[in-house]
Amino acid sequence: MANRIQSIVLDGNKDEYECISYFRVVNGSGETMSLSQEEVIACIEDGYAFNIRIKTEEVPLEIGNTKDGRQYIKTDRDSDFPVSIVQNVPNT
Image (tube, rainbow, N blue to C red; front, side, top):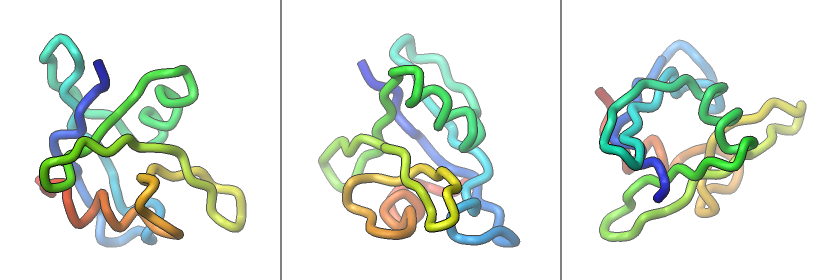
């Protein structure tokens, strides 16, 4: 079972790739935890899956790369920025 992103914490002082400070995650056991974007990237690289809900569909998260090589979290619906995450996941 994939980990579900329940909400995000935004930092308006950062650029569009680093604007998500933390993800609030509910894991397969029902436990809630906060993970930084770097921690979610590391977990995905280690084989863990994360999803967000967009309307009625569970959409997997993936790692994107900026033009200068920085990694960030996005969905397959995003082109250059993590727009679907910021617009569809509650900001707490």
